[in-house]
Image (cartoon, rainbow, N blue to C red; front, side):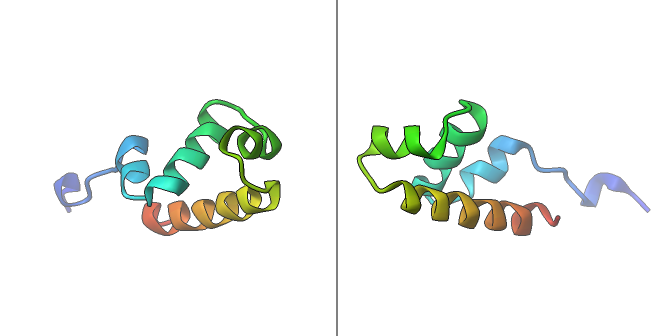
Length: 67
């Protein structure tokens, strides 16, 4: 069986498939190591909203990546 059919997705490919707001928040949280509170303060939204977006984004990433 050939691996040519199963193209691995890069992190950038997977992130690009997310809604813009989730992509920004997950990038800030995981790639820039910002806490939910720091992100909330930077974006001017409640911290709880950021925590929900992180959880939703993680679930969507897992589904996209097939994990």
